[in-house]
Image (cartoon, rainbow over all chains, first blue to last red; front, top):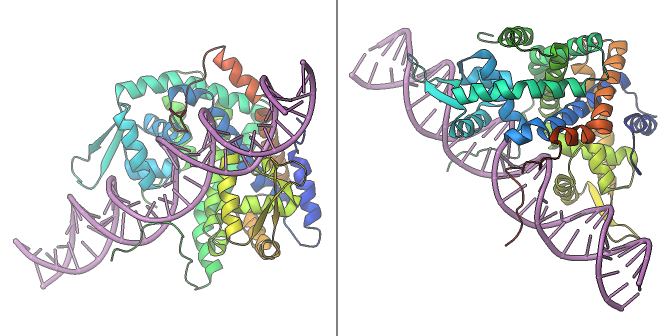
Length: 190
Length: 190
DNA sequence: CCTTGATCGTTCGGAGCCAAATTGTACGGG
DNA sequence: CCCGTACAATTTGGCTCCGAACGATCAAGG
């Protein structure tokens, strides 16, 4: 693989570049590798089992959440799947049009919608999940069960930290200033 | 937080749902948490330091790579940043239009382009990186330095596994069959 | 020269994605 | 019954992203 640069080499270069700056090296490395690993895993799974089921990572995750939780309100599915409500509207509509999912109104609260799998969706997941899990095992095959457990637990700590203290932290950083507008997004009419 | 469902609760439900199926639980958990952590970290950083610099995660990573490596051919930047060549074309053009980056032709090979930072780009990174790193420390603040090191090392194993054996694995899975077409993407003309 | 094949970066179609604006429903107090 | 507030999903605008197709360039071998 000519011209290929390994991770650790990049990290060494970074350290050199940052010679004069005080940094949190371990924390930098863990964040960089979390993201790198996530991309690698997603790419492998999208290009293997998900590809021939014609599913994206996101649509698979949505199916998985509904499969595991059973009939669920959309806001919970969005949170559990880690996507915004707006994204879920589009994804779930696509899955509905493919006959894998139904979107029913809540019997007593007209604002809510309930997602559940069709029989076809259930069958797909029963067929697909074992293959998906097989590839999860493949990507993690250089780790022992014990290492998987401790890494997973460490990553949960990261998630909890952001979920429980992230918002407050962001407010502190702003320190009363106006939050900068996002470049994209809907504008006020008129 | 009414209606909120914790990670571990979801994992228990999953285990129940999958009672009859033989699965690799630890590997499933580690993959799920890698992705979850990556999303959480990205979201926190995009909504704090990157937001007021008006940068996305990807454009920051591209700037970072070129900052650390110095003048670099685009294909290497794409690989290092973990994005496709096509995406890099758009991102680097945006960064160029904002005066943060230059894209020069290679002196002896007309096919190549070389990316480097402008003075303004350098200045931005010198100002931005410490703040970025501060937030990396924030998200990892529930982990000790030692835990960060061992988690980062574990994640590198995942990345290496996919990089070194992923392609062969995907070919094995296909077992001679035609690779399924992607739903999106450019079609042959005519 | 002139192929032929490999390898760049770029283009482009289709999907994903967020956050703000909007629409629709629920429910409490006049 | 009619407000006003709260909260649900949806719409919308602008961008990101991938990967296949493409055009340009290079290098090797007639």
